Image 1 (cartoon, rainbow over the protein chains, first blue to last red):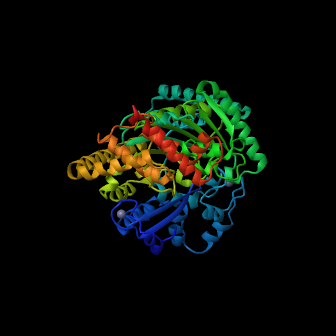
Image 2: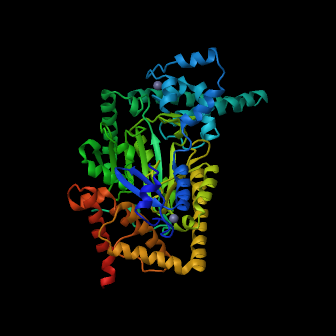
Image 3: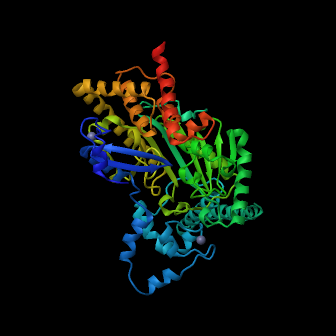
Length: 189
Length: 347
Ligand SMILES: [Zn+2]
Ligand SMILES: [Zn+2]
């Protein structure tokens, strides 16, 4: 973007935005291969300048990382982080810090301790409350159910409701068997 | 040349909200993200996704294309129609692909920053409807593909800014009166505080050409998809209300100046012989404002969104059937606009 008042003034143009005041500021910018020239008065340039400032990417990973890296304690923890590699794709945390992208889904487990404060800073939360995939989420839902049933069974035993506990135990066994065969199917896919 | 469904000017609050969009990022399990794949991995991945798309082609009316099989101008038109992101269409083209439905409201971008980006665009403010369709298509794709998902973090994405719902909902909104009355920057500052981002017509880094802005959720984790969509819908309705208020204020307090502005814009659009795309967007914005307020008759040859896309460089070159240099484009654009807008006065 160039800012040369003389050029615009010498052409004696009116501001392209308000069509009233003389254009004293010249912006030239290439967007999607298309060059655009803007000749604006000082007031309009200020107003549009505010958008340019606001329309930029405001909240990038690098931006937030910059803030976090400053807070990181120096010493053993840091050197551990810098030598850690994702066993699946070989990506390093250093490369993530440079590119803002991770290498593969497994990187999230590899760098979990480093990513958690970043994710919290980016989203204000670290817990997903949205959609669960139908097929991929089934196993997770079953695990949740299983944990629930085990809890109920424990409570039933505590208050000596043995008949109920036995019923729950059968339910748990059935669910466990179902999950085993599911896992077999997953391998086939 | 074909227009997309989202340009048809229908839908709730369509006078101010041009279109709305929901985009879901999905990645395949145990597969490096696109920037990290070697050629072999990329080919395998692409074949798996193409196979999945083939299963859905009939039911969803999808057409699968490798971007390397499309000409640069065709790719540019897809970007201008918002069916493909500038990033996906950017050179060098290697393993990028896209599946688009008949009505051009659904597109699945393959090998952008994430393996898949499922996008639904509709006219007006109907984000719930976009989410409903995107959600169904996501379920359909998941029948054939294993997506990377973690119960705690949600859907896994290449960039941690997108994890969780991995959803970006956005609206494309025309705010000429808020800009004219110098209220726009104040409104945008408030939006940033609410976790929303404002961008120009063609996404990140592009300018607010023609008083058109894209507003989207910045945060993707911690709330459900429905909650994110509800929040953006409510915020958009409030902005629409402020824009309407500002329009009435202008009409009452500076009616003649406004009518003069609109009339001049109409005069230029219907008589100029050379027109840059930037000037066209600016003038079309004023004509649209004038038509919304009843100061002039609305153009009947094409909707506002259709006129915007039809005057973009890629679209013009497809219309002309050949590559055009910038000078030729500016002339053809002026001819095209004179023809589209001038006809209604000759009745
Ligand atoms: Zn001015
Ligand atoms: Zn990895």
